[in-house]
Image (cartoon, rainbow over all chains, first blue to last red; front, top):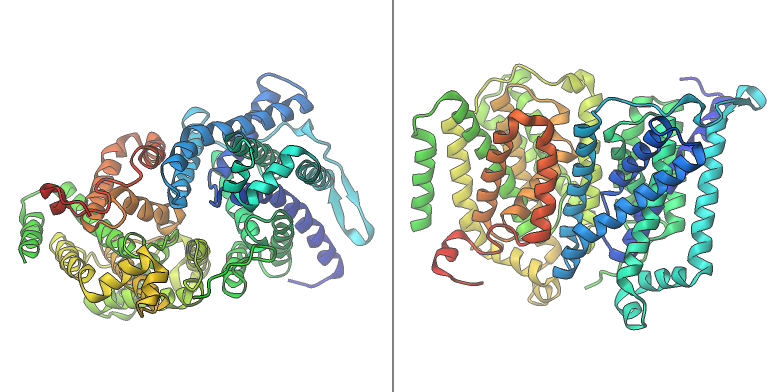
Length: 298
Length: 298
């Protein structure tokens, strides 16, 4: 494939746009990990719930874009909280081993995915054309940027900014940061840990839904859409699990790497590059860019 | 000694009981799954290292054996062994850096490894025939052969777990710090466990190829890896007989629901969550089945 400056810029724009969607999902992973220290693989399920809720609110019930999106965010958030109540909480109360949570989360993911397969069918669905503006802007030198690229970038920045404000300026944000530092001590200091965990899952669910809506605009909607969160998870690991800035940086790196590979090498290699990046990162710097240092010196 | 004789009797019963072709197939599949599950059990159950990518070692074993027998006309037994050793080589390379760290870093790396190997197999068209799969493998996995290998490995594993090395693994699982104070190099013992478990999975993959006559990269995806870990947890972490029972039970359950394939995955997901919520210690906990009869608690 030929190397041109305009392809380079085009792929950088595409990469940033994809990376911003990854960032929304990866931040949800990291948020849960920072409190409960397990990788919540049901996150992909929350995302699919958001996508389908948005689809049905738009098409079946004919609500506007804003109401549909709000409904989708709520649906995902509530699903996340329900999952926490019905599956994770009983396990946490019984054992401190996070493997059980991990396997349960994979189970929840399989359940959600296949609930959609059984009820609405595995066929691919597309959000209605007029949901978002679809214009394409020509930048200099034949580089284009679609309206959905801009919207997903802007929305990602807005939601991540809101999350940052919530975490740094509110009392509950402070509580979450305290719990990320040491959840036991936070509980002893009078923080309602049970409520806090639900809150974290709710926020993670909302972010997953935003990611889900953008993914279903970018690709299309199908029950296995959640499997794309594996990449967001990898982004979170590369940035450092449990670190929110890390999740954003990791996502942008991953989005860029993926799109540059697709543009200059071959689009079949993009997934391979992603997984190789993960393995290489773990070999060189297992805690990721911003992760807590792992002390393991005996 | 008594245990070995019982195992051999079970093996004879499995191998010689007159059955139809379909039941015979289920027994072969059970033996293949049990071999892989025993491997994961050594690593996860007895050494305490979680894995989300052991299907990769099965894929390596399956492809090595298939390519050696079909392309190079090497006889079956050396090819299967070569499959096992191929898995050992890759496990050694990936374990060397990641097993030094505490936490789930091996699990995350193994997830990346599993997907990377699947993608390499898919994209290396000229060598592996890519996602179309590799056909024409000689059907060398007969019932007698599968049962023989399974029983042989089961006897070795049961005795291995009571050997010096087996105790070393359990020590580093129960308390890594104490084990290293006793003079064990815990990193080395974890490496040994990983390498052995990869060998089992490689053999199992090679047997699977010989049973199906056809292998495909998508047979060894993340679902398969999750299933391997889930089966071990279902049987009971730290119980080899539990692992074998669990693996056999899951194989049977999945076969039983083959008619309603739509709901099969839904049931599988529910099963995972229900086991984690209500019986996280699995079928047998950390006891072996004969301890259960005598009411011995460990």
